[in-house]
Image 1 (spheres, rainbow, N blue to C red):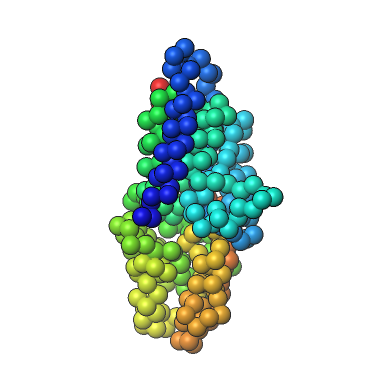
Image 2 (spheres, one colour):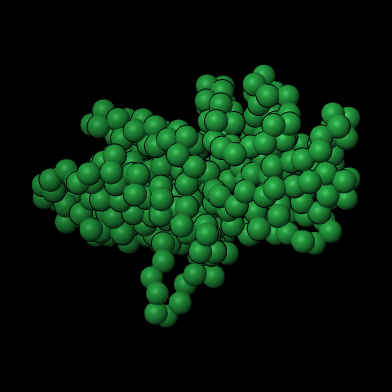
Length: 297
């Protein structure tokens, strides 16, 4: 039943747009081409997380001047938290695409700011496919891949992640915390671990809800006699997971469990969307999506 409400909402908007498109079908579609970019993230209800997304927003606008840039959140929980009677916040991808079509945009490049092509991205991909198949709604729609999708993505991201650790002390290990998922795309995390180890044997990956878990990494820290660890979120934003699961004071947080081994921790509460070397990779994926859009008829 988890997908029922989103699907019903999507079908409702598809029906609405089909009805609105009926006159155009009868008289030909004379609308001029009008391009837009839709940036799609999980979303964040924390100011720190929103700051990271605003940083990427500025990069996208600078890279594509003159093209409309809008946002959507894939997390219904985040959307519900942010929705108030007085404040407008990004809606779902389906809502955002429907609004773009209603506003006269005919060609849209959608860019995911997810870390892996997991469940959230899979749902986004399905939404994009449905809108792409609508007569006279959007003439063309493309989808940019998330941060970690291909072997080349993994290599580039591993180097960017390590290059971004300015101020890292000599002998200090670095642990990148991902979300983790039951989706098959969780395989990207151990694949990232492999790529990091080709560059730095003291760089680790652990996830909150997937594999490798922190329990897989703790024995390695002990084995390698690590004395200090830098903790970095492997997520677009340093939101709730970064502040609580990674850096929190509770005994089950990453920081607390590592400290229990007598190892010093230094949390870095900065999202990847505001880390230039990493956000540049997402921006390159967006360029690919815009290029693909221009090649569509």
